[in-house]
Length: 391
Image 1 (cartoon, rainbow, N blue to C red):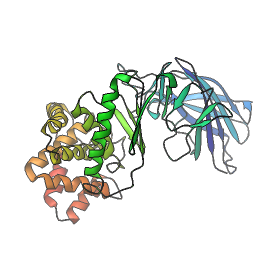
Image 2: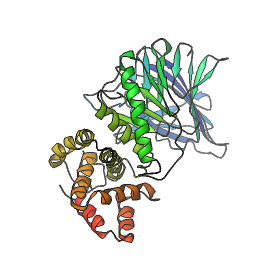
Image 3: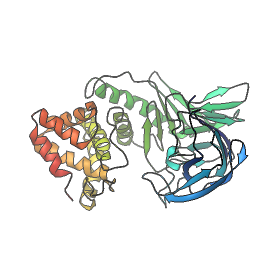
Image 4: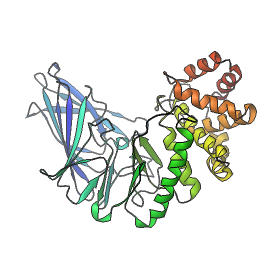
C-alpha cells in the first residue's frame, strides 16, 4: 500500500471548503506529520486516526512562485495511519501582491492551481497517489476531469498529469473548439476568432519543432483552458497535455508567441525552476520561439518577442545569483544573452545550444557547457560562461 490523498472539493461562488483524507503506507510508523498550505486558508479541523488531534503552525515560508505558506505540524500519541484536514478559503490571484497566480473562483469559472497552494504541499511524507473529487457538478465541466454519473461528481487526478490544476466552467457559458491536435475551452464567445487563429498557429509551431528543431516525439492532444475575461494578466503555463492561459492572443504575434513558447517547453524543461538554473528552461524556450520567427521570416513576431527584453536588460541582475536563488528577470536576461550570441556567432550557434539543452540528461548550466566543450564549440561555451555573470 502506498500513501494516498483524496481531496473532496466543495465550491461556492467565492470560496471553497476541502476535506483532505490522507492514508499512509502501512510501513509508516511516525507520530508526526507536517504539510504547508496557503497562509490565508483557515484550518477548521484536523483528525489523526479519526480523532481530533493537536497541531501547531510551526513556521511561515515564502517559496518561489507561490504565496506565503504556513507550515502545520500534527503530533499524535500513537503512529499515524490516517489524517483528515478540513479547511476553507479563497485564493484569488492578486496583481498587487503578485501572488496566487492563475487562481480565481466565480460563478462561471473556477481555476485552482499549484501556484496558490490551495491544497497540502511539501508534505513530510511523499504522496504517491492523489485525486480530487468535486461533488454536485452537474452544471459544470472540468477540463481533464472524469464525470461519475452515479455520484454526480467530477474526479480529477492520478492519471499522469498534475492533479491540482482544476479548471471548471459552467456549462451554460462554455465554448469548445476542437481539431485533431487540440481542444480549446473558453467562456467568452467574442474570442472565438482568436481561438481559430490559435489552432492554426499551433500547427505551424508543431511542424517547425517536432522532428526539425527538436527530436521527434508523439505529441498528445492538447487541452487549452483559457480563463479570459475572469483573469486578464499573468501569462500562461503548460503541463504535458494541459495548457492554461489568460488569453489566446489579441493579435497574431501574441498568439504565435504564446504557442511557440509554451510548446517549446515540451523539450525545453528539466532545469530546477526555483533556482537561477531556470534561465535554461526559459531562454531555450524563448529562443525556440525566435528561431520559429526567423524560419518563418516573421520579423514582426521576432521584434514582438525580443524588443521588450532588450529594453529591460540593463536594469536586471546577473543570471547566476550568488546564493543560487532565481533572480528577477532571469527570463529576459537569458534571452538577451542568446540574442547577443546570435549577433556574434550566428543562428547555427543558437540552434545548437537550444537543441543540445533539450537532449541533455542532466539539465544544468555545467552540463550544457561540458557538452559544448565536448562538441568542440568552446566559443559558445565561453560566450555563455561570461554572459551569465554579467550585470
